[in-house]
Length: 380
Figure 1 (cartoon, rainbow, N blue to C red):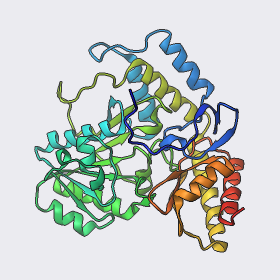
Figure 2 (tube, rainbow, N blue to C red):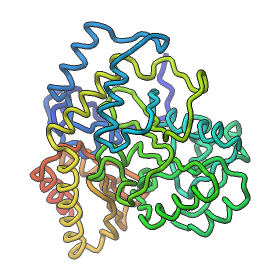
Figure 3 (cartoon, rainbow, N blue to C red):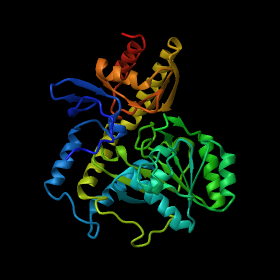
Figure 4 (cartoon, rainbow, N blue to C red):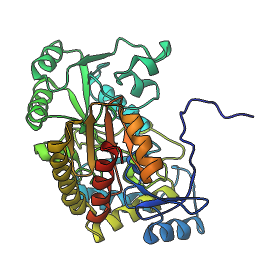
């Protein structure tokens, strides 16, 4: 049997990780500034994380959601306290796409309406409903095509209100920062007005914090810079540092009904142990404040570099969610960073290099990247 060939792969295979680095079989070390699509939040093979998973799997890795699992409540308690959403409820699932599917389903249940508003260049996942609110026709099959989704320009509040005024919309879904679009910023003032309009028109506000959440921007959630509280927040990626997990954080105004949501593997004993360990490490090692400080340093250094290198068109982001837009080919530049400088980075289209490192990234490693980036720009 062959693998279904849908991925473009680098000719490189990490077999081991530790902290902010990964290693190939021959022992070659690579600095990881991408974290496997923002998944590695506390670093590779953190001792607390490894111990928690090993201890849990030696006792019980999985049983169904038809029995009590106190680890789910332990996770909810920690997450509520650290995120500032202790009065909200938690539904656990397996991925970001599944979290968004359930969020939109809840919005429809809650309002009795069917339409969802999304934004240009959005990415919310690849399952049927999630890909329908993703602004990329190339990854939408005819099966995913639906009249229940409409798109408006990001940060255009007048366009939003014109849609809401029709009375047809159950919810609106927006990323804290648009990641796949190239670290495209959502204005704080736009989010505040969007919150007001959602309240005015009875539209459920869904904040997709799958990439921008969990401390990545220097706040627990990116939308907290705007000082708002959405009705539903979706999480995944960094929630369990590589163990597949997603979460939906739900306002108390939205009431649960038995059977309205469900999942086989979501919130398993092993997944909860992993996610609890992530929150413990984030808190004890002050990783959110580190993301804010090191991210600020990186952005300042990159902006300084841009002053002498016109190839850098713009530096965008918050915390350790950074996009560097360049004039030339970002994929080619990333290959040189990987194979010449041994640094993993991410991409977003033809002209953007995306940085999503572990929140544990020290300033020394950030400095190493800036120096390597400068050398690559200068052809060294």
